[in-house]
Length: 206
Ligand SMILES: C[S@@+](CC[C@H](N)C(=O)[O-])C[C@H]1O[C@@H](n2cnc3c(N)ncnc32)[C@H](O)[C@@H]1O
Image 1: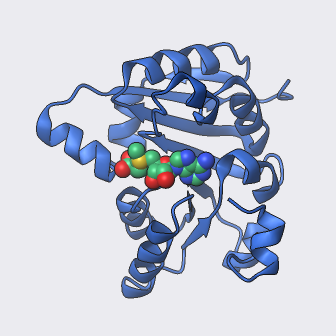
Image 2: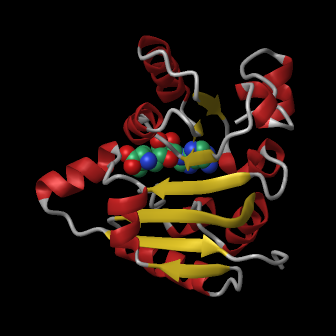
């Protein structure tokens, strides 16, 4: 994908504001869905929680276009869809300490060994997510790929500012049991899913 600067220059994406509160026109909790796909999860969350602002981040333009149509159709002023490559753009999208919660739902497995570096949850990404979250914020991760579950458990577990939470309880109580497109399919077909949830503790992200 082109760099964020280049995409902004050719009008393919709006410049991310340094301050999303200014973009939404209010100061509200900010939840970010990383790799939202067609956006079923974030649309439902935004409908259920009008007092929270949501960002849906996704590399495939067709899903961003679809989601923007849904945002208009449902008149959701608290949701924006941003076309981006998380691996290159994530540091530029938010000021540190500004995000209330991240969701990572069924990230791509990138099966081939030479593609493993494209996996979303890696030690560097975990450090970056820790820096972007506000203290007391949270991160929820879900996958049906056992290797990704192991990697995420190790990467978040190695990071001192992430304290594990009861993920089943978090999904039911904090996320209202809302599932993504892939999450619904796993539930329908009885595919086992690993869920992880963490609280971002106060203190510097090393
Ligand atoms: C398996 S799908 C899951 C979609 C959705 N979260 C769900 O649970 O149904 C993974 C999504 O992550 C997106 N994705 C993968 N790598 C990405 C990246 N570097 N930046 C942004 N999105 C990415 C893919 O385009 C795809 O839509």
